[in-house]
Image 1: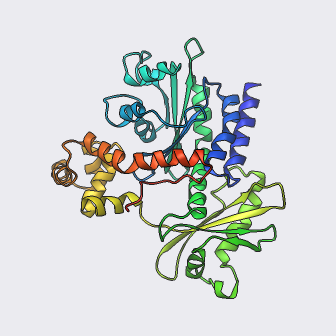
Image 2: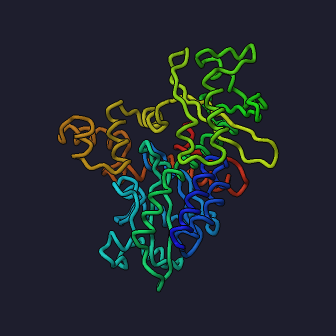
Image 3: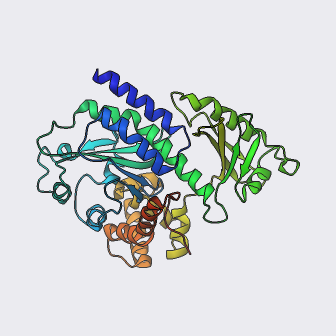
Amino acid sequence: MVTDARDLARDKIVRLSGQGLDLVSFWRACREPLATAVPHYWAPCFFTLDPASLLITSHFDEGIPELPPEVLEHEYLDDDVHKLVDVARSSPGVSTLHEVTGGDPTGTPRWQANIQLGGDQEMIAALRTRSGDVWGALGLYRDSGRPMFAEPDKAFLVDVAPHLAEGARRALVMGEAVDPEGSDAPGLVVLDGRLRVESLTPGVERWLEDLPDGEWGSGDLPSVVKSVAASAARSEDGPDDPGQVAMARVLGRSGTWIVVHGAALVSPGPRRVAVIVEPAHPARISSLLMSVYGLTDREKDVTRLVLQGNATSEIAQSLFISPHTVQQHFKSIFDKTGVRSRRDLVAKVFFAHYEPRLRDNEQRALASRPLRGGPGSLM
């Protein structure tokens, strides 16, 4: 019976991830199947992370509309365990606080903060797509005296994590298309059941014209948009891996790589499909580090890997340089950013550029506005 319930819960999450829901609606709809499959103490804590830096960009918990400052202090200032970045970088992508502390978490700041809210156990899962990008994290909690989170619980989260990640990724991109931020924001095309254009967001014409065989001036959609829309329409009934089908990456006429992805929209009326067209631009964190701090390309690479929690040896191996060269880059980066340590660097970048995004997203959630990903605006 437990296996049947978990199978049904998984199938529901898979379907939800392909329905083009906004992020808050997606998180809310996932609460029931998660509670059925893995009973827990209070509403799940959902986070989105910037895949480029693994720093928090938003948080959603029905009972905690604003994340307490001390939670962020534990995550980015304190010497603590079971941080989101550690779980995101781990091979399993899921762990419990009891597990990483050898069964006794009581001496950790994280457990002490959790217990004040009534939670004794904590299980965190990284929301990682099939391609390996981490778009978020999920925290589940149990109060004292409850059965310990076990391997079947962890296995379930590992199974559904790619679908939760895909739903979050799609919601963030669609939200930016509906409520754009910047000139390179995604564009949105909504099609009816016969794949005829129903509506467009401002600026999407630019991307449609740049696509191969795009002749939007004559009203004809590029073939890649039609193909992705058709795949999205077929996926409405819930394929095994939605989102992996309805996506394409093509080289535009301008030389810019463009990503086209679609989703069947949930509505009581006739079937409708949303197609998002966006530039496959470099991570926004790179532009931020260059414009705000004046870091070189190599210093940006080193900083990005530091933000992701990599050790000096891992950075050296990743960039094919010596640990000594990494240390030299650290000195220059610290001078330019005005910090003295790696931890200070992570904290400065987060609290200066990501916490404002997090706080804005909390207000957006309360106002039923689309949530945003990545660091805050450079303006």
